[in-house]
Length: 302
Image (cartoon, rainbow, N blue to C red; front, side, top):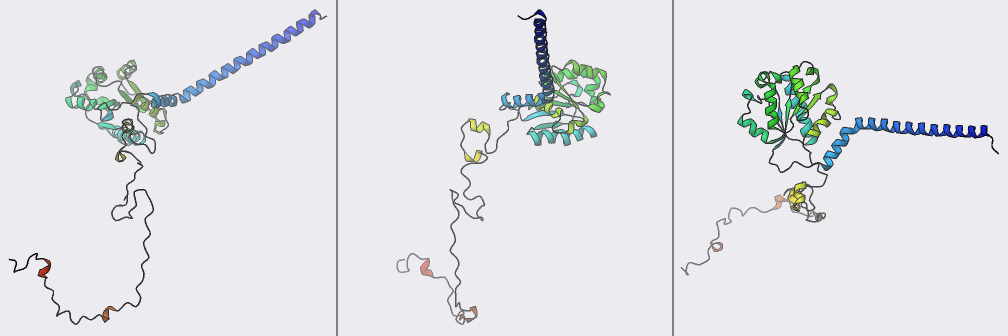
């Protein structure tokens, strides 16, 4: 029979093993949570971009000519940023079309007819909000009223601010922008935002329309959805041009067979010299036109 001290010892050992297992399980769960949090912080923008590019609706056939209307101030810094950083990156790398405008966005705090027409042609509105931009009339008079006008013109406008100028912005402007974060998107351009893999470009793409990426060898997806088989409307058609090099090139057949081989040119042997040809009677030859070649009737028939 087992004694009482032995039973107590076994119970203590089993309890200790159970505590160790519970601690190990808690540590594993904690490690999974920490790793998941780190991965979410690092990859959340990439995951959102992938989901948007995979399942978001395409904004096509809506009558808009441009993806974004960009309003900026014609200062040295703003012009360089817009023309040499923002526009080339979005258009050349991602295929967006931008409409740039350096004029006053809201003259007399009211949108002009031209502004209404231009904004209506664009799917988004981007404002490069710098210190020079805030010197415009509508920003000086009433930034709040101007912001309300912009919210009426475009769905969730995008404001790009420079990090080195953020502390110098008026407190009223920053507080008003932060209070309207649900209706607008505010992005901060930092020193490391130049990299194409920075969070700035990812966040900007998330608020811009989804772009359709064409795979190699496929045509326009809108044409493919309509079952259009016209070879002139596809990138790489199965029926190639039978004469791609033009009339002066080597003519190929319709089925891309190699061109027939030309017979080798035989050299004429014992060819007479051009000096041995008799040309003494050239002056006595008749070079006038022969009438019997051109007359269908003769003189007696007339």
